[in-house]
Amino acid sequence: MNFVFYTHSLVSDWNHGNAHFLRGVMKDLIRRGHSAKALEPQASWSRDNLVADQGAEAIQTFHHIFPQLRSEQYDSNFDHEAALEDANIVIVHEWTEPAIIAHIGKIRRDGGRFLLLFHDTHHRAVSAREEIAGLDLTDYDGVLAFGETLRQRYLDAGWGRQVQTWHEAADDTLFKPLETNHAEKDLIWIGNWGDDERSAEIVEFLIKPIRDLQLSATVRGVRYPAHALDALRRAGVDYSGWIANAEVPKAFARHKATVHIPRRPYVESLPGIPTIRVFEALACGIPLVSAPWPDTEQLFRPGEDYLVARNGDEMKKNLHAILGDPDLARSLRNNGLETIGARHTCRHRVSELLSFVDELTSSPNQSHEIKEPAE
Image (spheres, rainbow, N blue to C red):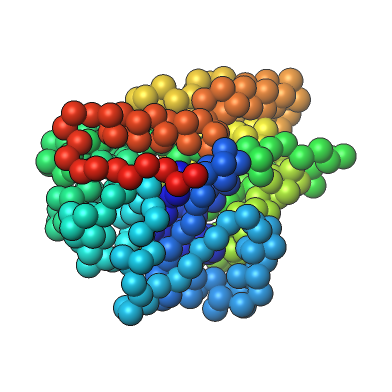
């Protein structure tokens, strides 16, 4: 089948976690013999910031690392009808401009013989509800929501015909343990500052434990304000800015442990949805301590796959235990790898996607004809 993904960006992962997941999904679709390409706007804040931050060579690095992935840019004069003429499945991400979302729906309504899905991987359904409510999803065949609580939000609001939970996952062809002689530092955190959605939590669960335990630590990410950078410096943290997602496994391999600090909207309003960082860290076999988030869907085994810290004191206690107990670190590493390998790779998510496609196309309520896959 021919898959087309409308995304904010495939090429840039600068403050854009959906690119991580989409790359892994497209790679696995291609591995299975399908065709997959991305369409992204010519002007996107992620790509623009990546080039401003790292230079144009960062774009060339993407193509070097992912030679099998195709992405085409579109502008206001782009012929979307022609681009979708041979598509079997079209998946539109929720960061796509509302006018484009509506236009693709109109193409579907006016005879487009492809299955049209909307993909939501953010918290705007609760934090910016009017924006999501204003999107025209009338002609979309289904919605892919990256957590059960988000799926329920769509169902309760009447957004979309069929809504499927489709969690993010790790691309385990990229995210896997890398052998090193020894870790160089104690702790690494990879995450963006995030519009004050977790600023207090970063201080409590990251900066203070590093300072109090006198850990050697690295922080990678973007959008840190001056006061945050100053706090990192005073705690002795090595802050090195943006890191390409493809380089993260190497960074994990140079450290003994990592932490997860969820954003407040997910904890308070969309419980049960971890960020993709959890999947990727566990897939790399690095011991993880997480600030509180309710795993309502039982995706993991808290206490076995990773440790949970309900407050800063517990974060210090758990980090101290991991760093001082090789057997505990080894157990967390093995358990996390087991859970990811059994349930949470991009291969699993592609299988779930194909099952959802089969369900929609075989449904008697399917009102649009889907053309046969191209040979």
